[in-house]
Amino acid sequence: MEFSPWKHPAIIEHNQRLIQSFIRWTGRSLLPLEDTPEEIAHALFEAPFVVVSHGTEADPILNYGNRKALQLWEMDWDQFTQTPSRLTAEPMAQPDRDRLLTRAKASGYIDDYQGIRISSTGRRFLIQNVVLWNVIDEQNHPCGQAATFCKWEWLPSNMDQQELEGKSQDPEGERVGE
Image (tube, rainbow, N blue to C red):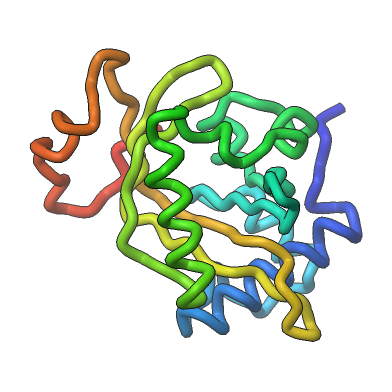
């Protein structure tokens, strides 16, 4: 039987925080909000775009990934939600990732990021048009950070950052992933 995280009360509550925080910072919604919290949690898990989040630990641990995220990072729910979020980027890309997180923490969100990430099996991919935002609870206390994107591209294992900077962008802004 397949694990259905969207059915668990803690995940439903976390999804509400993700969505409400996204609205607060960006003025936009990730999904239509006419449904029940349970239906929204299911829709977010099955969304055609990636949504991930991590907590507020000193070395933040991933605490949510929808189906697209789990597929992209090639992990199951249990493995994903025990992974330090820094491990989603290669060691050489972690300083760039840290600057991104700091910028978002200071301003509430950013929506102009692209970078290289790495799956659990070592496959590299470029993520583009990333929105990263601070997640807060009902009392405005920090709960972590989340990110969403719908455009990614698998990379040859020998492509480096300099080659990426010279790579042409997809003018349609469409997902290059699956």
